[in-house]
Image (cartoon, rainbow, N blue to C red; front, side, top):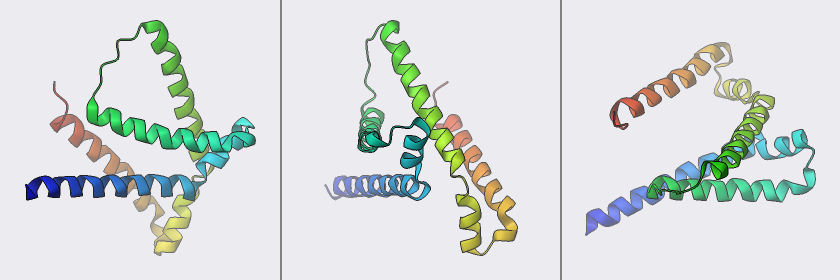
Length: 139
């Protein structure tokens, strides 16, 4: 019984930590305001914010449930297109505000080692991806 509560507590805490980190990441980088500037839709900033919130909630739910959607390819084509547009706009906004790494390096006192900081991020992503694909993906 205690192990169930501990599992629930650790899972909930991990979810809160990841969610708070995601929100802080978007807030510090100013991604949503930059997306509205790129698309010239400043009046819809609340819709973008709610879209990100609902997307994170639905994405979490889908990753926990693994649902099967019996949709025709004609429905999946627009869904894939909209997903691609969103990811592209998010990537464009991130490249616009990517000066976070020099600021972070300066505040951490490692501004002369910014290449090491970037390589740590890159290698961490590569190692994490390899770990995921080698241990968690069924072949």
